[in-house]
Image (cartoon, rainbow over the protein chains, first blue to last red):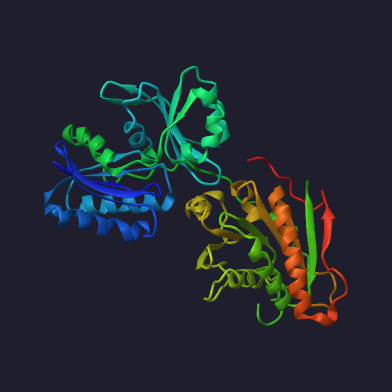
Length: 247
Length: 193
């Protein structure tokens, strides 16, 4: 069964088409085009160049993040639209699971770390298990300093992968030999691994509900902006007119 | 250390020059928070800044559109959170992505969402002066957050003094910039988020 995988939750967007026999086509980009500009033309490129059509696709796999907001929205919305119009099953997987899965051959504890911007990272810990990986912690968004402390307090060696691990490399390397940093080919979750991870679920018919599938937003806030305090403190300075005519 | 730099501009043109003076010290990844009531000159300031950063198109207030993106020497993200009420609304806009390390980010009323801002940024407050005779006068206070911003603000002052003197040589009566050592009463306490 051919699966179309869409991974656009990080700055490196990619699509891949593959089955249990291997990946047949893929496209990847990490600068220039926006997610929207990249995604459907990339799918078309993969289909056309491999002599396939949408009718050959048997299922959709999409990365739900955590990751960059726009990318997650574009990826999930596009995958859902394709699944609905083509009447195909869909499976959602997380960016951190995909990232950790790619280094499953390590014997170490794996920490998948993606840059969440604003001095924070998304992360989760995994242990290698026969045939794959097993997630040990919740998906979290946290300051890298705190993650570094968490890693230092673990008794075992940890392999850190992802662009967050590379970005805050110095913080993690200060931990000495306890932390190993994955290289740039493991900086981002790939759509090829996404396809590989989705295949067993497709065969088990462990599909996601098209209507319930949502990006994984880790940042939530119920806080209201204290406008009274902010505006009130400086609204006492006269009538509200533009400065001069050209304002 | 909380030091701030105060200056009074006498016209929109001077506010524009002040904005332009900030351009040479800005680098991708820098974040500015700009606050001040309607008519305080925020848009004029950003126009000066954007033009000096090579933006050729029109720069307008994003109050009702929330986000404007400009292409200059760097991408410039100009946003205004004034019309938003909750932190969730801001997150739902993909706020974290606006902090593109390749872009310069200007947030109007950024102090309202200070918890969401990076630790180092430049806060700029603009208001009318107390003088009712001087309708075009604006008091502009630069409040650097982080030592590198202190240096950048002083660099901006040197540029601004030269440009303002060149624009109106007859009014030159020494420096109109005043460095104020904090903490001041109107400083907002900065929490380590």
